[in-house]
Image 1: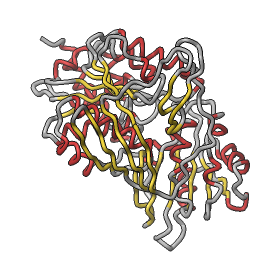
Image 2 (image 1 turned 180 degrees about the vertical axis):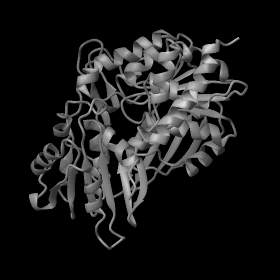
Image 3 (image 1 turned 180 degrees about the horizontal axis):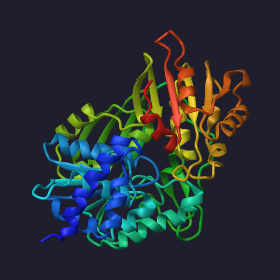
Image 4 (image 1 turned 90 degrees about the horizontal axis):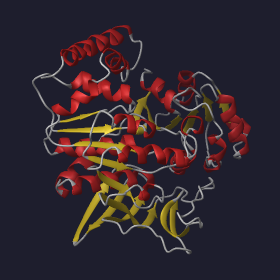
Length: 444
């Protein structure tokens, strides 16, 4: 029998959520969870009893919100119920928040899909034994919070060590992610070939991480798709990329991708309505999980057809009659991949904050390939607490100062971008994390 405190936690969470919505004090993605964990620290330990089938966790530096969103949508498309931290609040308070607001004492969900911050995964596994862990990638991100990549990898390794029965779905193309399997519980996904049929730049001048093999020799590449993602090998000891259980060829178009996936003797074709190779990786991670878990290819494609982007992840909004595409940027690799896809004929707003959740260190702006915007045809408006720093970065990227407007107020910056009476004029908005949260609440 559940502790009385668990049931009281559900009541407390709903009361807290109602209160913050009435007074509009926050987005409501973590506050109720924070209250619940303070009142009953063991709350998350009781939650798995309300999941009938599997608990799926997703982590990685980039793509975890989109990947977990796709997985959740595939499950729902097959008529199962799923509890999911949809809005990307992925620390313990955010996970507790969604469970506390969704659970009912006499009802259970079929699945849980939990996106987890890399550094908090081991803490999450103190309370919850997951059935699956999907790992997307590991890129340099928020050095003031995570440190170097070896530290981040250590967080995930420590989490996996706490759950020996965990089934791992790993990105074989990432030389760090592919080292996480110690017990033979992993399946691997990756791309064999990447082809482009679109007009954006495919090469990036952003610096890539240099990785050494376990033997100490530098890894070499037969194919390198972006950053450290590709087909790597070691000349000294013979270590090389894993053979993929879910191997894919991808053709990337301007706003969708076509994936041909091979699993053993089976071959599947999927169409993904998201832009960029980075989203093709997210889709392949979700597809690999879904096939491994027994979901049919028809269900998967139906889900891909109807998937709606989560806010800020290739999200499209109407702002004063203009089509506005919103893409989160937060680290060098992710930003550089997004910058490849930017419509240079649109008005561009780049909103950079340096709050705790963004990372105080903004040196990543200089490692991101903003040179991709050098051909911008219209306004480039910088905003947020680091609007001036961003404007300086764009100057060195080759954008004429006459095109750059500095407007620290994010709402005013977007209003400037939407000032034209020509509603065919598109807007591209590239915010950091806390800037994105502000934009999500704005009305125009």
